[in-house]
Each structure stands twice: as C-alpha cells, then as structure tokens.
Length: 86
Image (tube, rainbow, N blue to C red):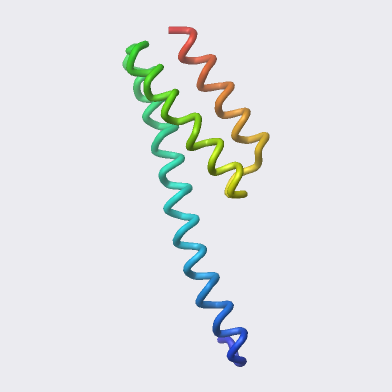
C-alpha cells in the first residue's frame, strides 16, 4: 500500500485511469466485433455501416494511446478487406 500522500493520490489516479481505459478498450472491441458479426452474416450493407462506425473509434483509441497506431491500421485494413470480399 502507498505510504505517502503523493503515492496515495497516484494510486487513486491510476485506478480512475485504468477504469476509463478499460471502458474505451471495451467500446473499441465491441465495434470491431460488430463488423465481424455482420461479415459472418454476409450482410454487405450492414458490414459497411458497422465498419464506417468502427474506423473513428479505432483512430480515437490509437490517438489516446490505448493501442498502437500500427495496430489500429492493421485492424482497419483487415476489416476493410473482409467487408470488400462480400
């Protein structure tokens, strides 16, 4: 456990940030799964809509530092390839 006032405050802040980041990461994963679900169903229009809503979420999480920019680019590329294959 933290002994100093500064360390206690940093522990509180770290927990707040952890919960905030977990929420954002969950939102990102949900959007990615929505695209994959539409692709699996074979619905091109739905998959395109889901992909278009997932792209800004991926960009935002990358800019916030939750995921690496290259990972966001890789996910977008793979999802786009699957949507276009429909």
